[in-house]
Image 1 (cartoon, rainbow, N blue to C red):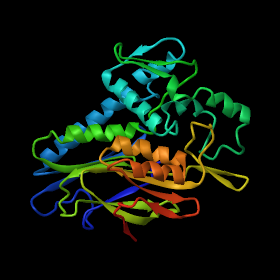
Image 2: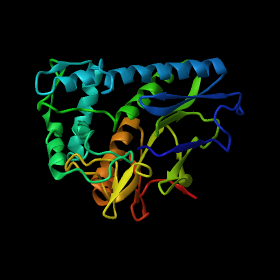
Image 3: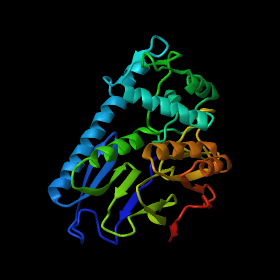
Image 4: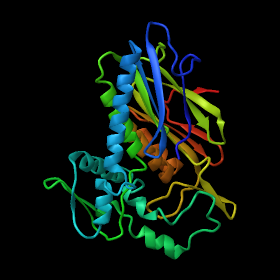
Amino acid sequence: MRLFIFIIAFGFTLGQVFAQNKIEQTKVLLLMGSRFEVTAVADNESIAWNAINAGIEEITRIERLISSWDAHSQTSEINRQAGIQAVKVDKELFDLIFRAKKISTLTKGAFDISYASMDRIWKFDGSMTAMPSPEKVAQAKAKINWQNILLDRIQQTVFLKEKGMKIGFGAMGKGYAANRAKAIMEKTKGIQGGIVNAGGDLIAWGESNTPEGWAIKIADPKDKNKMIGSIQLQNQAIVTSGDYEKFVVFDSKRYAHIIDPRTGYPTTGIKSVTIISPDAELSDALATSVFVMGVIEGMALINKINGVEGLIVTDADELLTTENLKLNYY
């Protein structure tokens, strides 16, 4: 689950007219099953709304392409043909899956879009009163293996090797959509800057009517109405994954809603992970990966990737940050 990320600009709320004759407008709506906020800063209201509407149109297009809930999407067709035959897909979807596999390689399987076969085993909506049996977990886990997602670049096809395999983009799709919306919005003549907040996968760029840029507050996983601190973004993305609402407790042990694809069991030890990078898709994927990898391995991964910073809150409420993260504490 994505934690709330609050946007502040010198104490003003979004949608106000600021100094320097710039207009800031925001539209809030439900897309990809999440709350999206699309903001544009422009010379006038018309330009701002043109950019916002173009960004929303792009997000809607991507949702139709990658949604595993839409029976007509190419992703759903890939899942239907698992273990049967390869499916020819658009280059855009092929490339997205290729990048997902690269993250799987980088994280040694901690990130795996074929985790989707676990979707009926674990419930974090309050209905689960006992751990699933080891047999059920093992049965679902047997279908998870990113190396069994076979890509043919020449034919531009995707084949899930085992029947019953599924792929899903819950850990990177909204980040990708935020990237694409930004790219489209930037093409609008007269646009000065903006933010796409895709259910907590946020990317900000350009002018925000303040010299410091966009000030982003990070929620405390213990209390979403309190803040850990704030970060100033300049043409960067920030994603926070947290379990403050979606978790279960069995035998006094807390299990987050994020599943470790290597074991089939929920993660433990971390309450939230925040990743800052120039790319929302990368931040999205890494936030989930670090949650799965754990504190030591996860922090080591963040530290070795250029241009990436991070923040981890452990189950013991210990706050850990990368050396170069500029966090304004509260």
